[in-house]
Amino acid sequence: MNTVLRTPTLELVKAACEKFDQDYLIVEQALKELFNQYPGNNDLRHVLLKVVALNSLYSVQIFVYSTTIPDVEDVARHIYRNAQSIAIPPAVGSPEIVDSMARVTIPKKADRNYFSFATKYCSWHNPESYPIYDSRVDKYLWSLQKQDHFAKTEFVHADLWDYPNFLEVMVFFRNFYNLGAFTFKEIDKFLWSEDGTPSPVSN
Image (cartoon, rainbow, N blue to C red):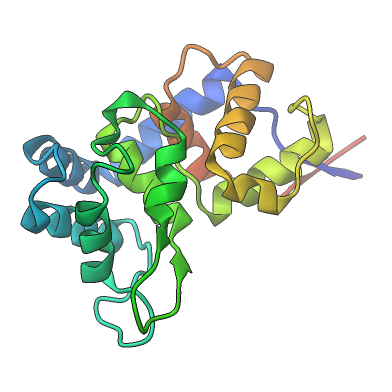
């Protein structure tokens, strides 16, 4: 008996999207309304609202308050303060924005790379251009690459923490499994449903 990951198919992605939409309807609607209402990042109050809501509803695990590492207000100020230099709002779809947003440096606090948060924040501004990274996605893509070699070049976990590289892997994934009919947002919902753990199958 071997252990394999399910091959991503149109049917599996559709089913995952339907289940996700049922399970997280209110959360998704609330975040969509919030980001639509405040699409810019030139008002610190609005940025803070988006950071706090996303941190809570997507379990990003940024501290609400901390004297040692950047907390939600620090992150909001980082986004607001660097809005021009990191080309926010990210509607233009530049992948380099994510890495710039993720790296938060605050005097007298330890530096942090809030990479997963930054992918989510950019995705909510422009879901067509910014697929979401989190630990479940990392585990699944890495396991699937070992099984199917869907990406043209091999990668390790650390490579996915560079957003242009992560985006390239996601494009390879979508193309290899003929999922071009789906947006990154829809593929995110499928990836969330997969945990990267192979299932036993008979020979």
